[in-house]
Length: 314
Picture 1 (cartoon, rainbow, N blue to C red):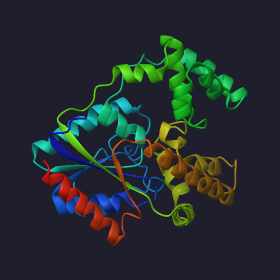
Picture 2: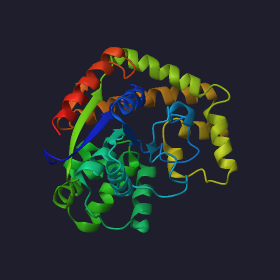
Picture 3: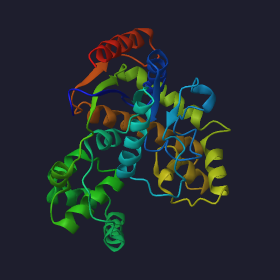
Picture 4: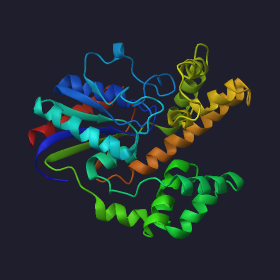
């Protein structure tokens, strides 16, 4: 990443930490526009389970790459990188401050560092791998550990989408995806980046996440939202239905679990997801941690101070 160039601010951290509130505060103070960096908020109709800010809550600040993909469309990190870079160019051309906001670390890395051009999907290979995973849960990750240990160490065993892609790349190219990624990156040029990470007290964050999940399943809630999306004609196997909350709501609709059990599972998985996000962002270079939630006055004041100092060095 260049040490000189146009300024760019990223606000990251675990789910529920108040990233949107802090990003809005910075955008209002410094004339910014917000670029979404959440892999599920890009999908139309998925509101409750993604904690997506409604239009009325965006306080007149332009937001980009929200509600830009239909639920049955394929949308990859490569797509995000390509579209996101185009959005950034437009914001900078308007002489506004781009503020990336979200918790999908892989999307942020794809945007800033670029991705290699991997092989196209091989549906027959994917079918065989998924069949193996269905017969022996965890089999794909164990295979990845043998074939590409570095990639396996960075991908959670439950993230079958990423495990599947890493295996697909390894088997088709006969080279580890971790190695190809390092060799094929195309970093974003001409920008300087200030990365701010929110780090609230873990116990308090988990309490808030539990409360948010409980509210999410309260009628009218995520189950009704899922019924509405299905009624629009989108299939139950669409990609965003795999995300936390929506997967559990689908099982309620299909009579596979009770509402209380679905809520408990969503709460547990959300806490685990927040922990994985912390782990990911701790490996993010040059990230400055802010202790607290994004709505806290002390956190906002510190973020404003850091952003002002950062912009003064442009």
